[in-house]
Length: 177
Ligand SMILES: *[C@@H]1O[C@H](CO)[C@@H](O)[C@H](O)[C@H]1NC(C)=O
Ligand SMILES: *[C@@H]1O[C@H](CO)[C@@H](O)[C@H](O)[C@H]1NC(C)=O
Ligand SMILES: *[C@@H]1O[C@H](CO)[C@@H](O)[C@H](O)[C@H]1NC(C)=O
Ligand SMILES: *[C@@H]1O[C@H](CO)[C@@H](O)[C@H](O)[C@H]1NC(C)=O
Image (cartoon, rainbow, N blue to C red; front, side):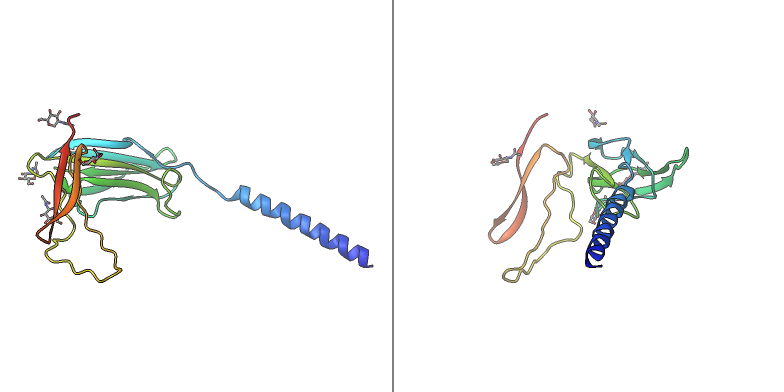
């Protein structure tokens, strides 16, 4: 009687293990979305750019916080979801990371998301304006504050530094490419 109970438990354990393995294999993971442009894209001020993303599930684009000259259009077809992001009449504000991801899945670059970094060159504006104007920043001890200092050209080496207790975003060097 006891021995039988043990073997039933053992069998139950094996069945649970098998269904566990099956469940892991069945968990559906689609291929990452594909883009028409990967890595880094350089463009000039006033240019337009289409970034098309295709994938097996519903898609969304995330865009830099400063970018505004954007529109999206649905290009789904042939059994694939498709979403085109269009940048029109670009300014340095459109500089930044553009990422296309599956709307209903956890965002993981290379798995459920794909991205491209866009630089919009404007010789008159070497820095990307920050989301908000910083005039005075109060920082309490132990607090973390992020102050962006981003170049609109990739070969700018920039740094943040204080001059008479005022923080400035500086160009350290310019690498000719
Ligand atoms: C940007 O403009 C410059 C000067 O007008 C030109 O030489 C360069 O090819 C343009 N770059 C792109 C990516 O269109
Ligand atoms: C592009 O934007 C600039 C202002 O940033 C404006 O002067 C110009 O007319 C716009 N060009 C087009 C084609 O919309
Ligand atoms: C760029 O973004 C900054 C901050 O949001 C804003 O003040 C500025 O007017 C924008 N410039 C253009 C050309 O859209
Ligand atoms: C940027 O400039 C600093 C100081 O000149 C230098 O130490 C650093 O290596 C530079 N970084 C790049 C990416 O060129």
